[in-house]
Image (cartoon, rainbow, N blue to C red; front, side):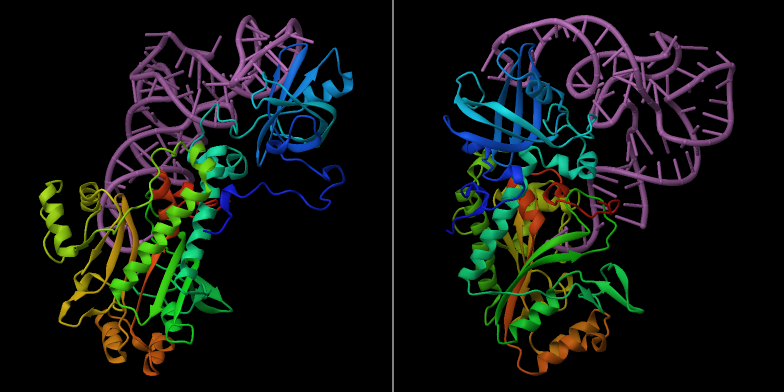
Length: 454
RNA sequence: GCCCGGGUGGUGUAGUGGCCCAUCAUACGACCCUGUCACGGUCGUGACGCGGGUUCAAAUCCCGCCUCGGGCGCCA
């Protein structure tokens, strides 16, 4: 495992950033006997009368600054006491060992400089004494991310993306980037965001599906992409976003079972990376005990087995029959029953998109698969239809005009190898891994039905 | 797209027709306090989303609008 992520050694500032910040010391690195300059946000001021404590917070943690009337310069003490919470200050002084201090060290300041004052009435409380609603938090994301637990989510998200990239590299993938502005939709039917492109109608892409398929027929053969997707569905749920991060895989010369193997490897790698490199972030989130890397082979249920098991739970009012899509309640019942990540394979062809290949011996049965977390769907994939005639017929069956997709279909006339792949919802991975209640918590600036700003 | 539930000081809340010129916490301001660690204490400032209606009386009931959240469908 590459070193990096949340637990990498605290980054030392190298060159001059600001004249007063040369050789800035992170609060976590301040050791007794050092002469240091720390810089950060005023987390709290505790004024006990003749003595006061200023808690300064930076990326690495917090440190206590002692202010004492009798033994220190009046102006220095006054500066320290006048500063509002969440103002940015830099403090120079000596670090002393002090068992009575929260971190066993405190700084005796020689100078305090206020670099940026904060207004006194904060729109939310970064010290976490008073809760804020998600909406308030998202409106003030900068302040929200000053809270350790919120920061930890994004440190872990960063580690997930790093480990996922490393896993794709293990698999011999090339990372690609495909256009997000497109002339036509990917799968038809789905709501797309229309935009104007130099006077022409265009759309925000809902998936890199068609483009990544075109790349398996290129010299690259095996690719992955991590990028935004846009869906104009007006849903309002804790697990949908209108702009999400899709983690996509596509490879030539593999079938759907091998694509599932790759999927399992990538998802497990994300968990392993977090387990290995995000110890303190997990601790901040209170997940140290319960965090588990998915173990062993993930169960692979056929669609038929899945509906039977759902029916057997008795959770649904109406029994499912072959051909039904799985309702949310059914997914949940099955998730509880299985109790781990699992795959659902061999879906009825009619409820999977046209570009998914049917089984050769049964055209009612598709090679499509979903990978599920007990709480929700994470991944959708399958072996693709690589035969030109079948593909064009599929378009027509779905009521789509193949001519509109000529840029895509014509490449199937020049040697498109058998291939398979999948797409993984990045935010859903973060959300399910950390047990977040709302997918919006897994994005810095979520786009949903009501939210376009910030 | 269909359905349901909310909006009360900066923040989070209590209050379901008169007991409310509105509760509590935190924040903010003033004062006291030399080892706090959610420091403590005293005092103070500050709010019923907007518009209309019902009623002797509306935060509370009704209608419209705005806004936030959730369920389903669909999906990652």
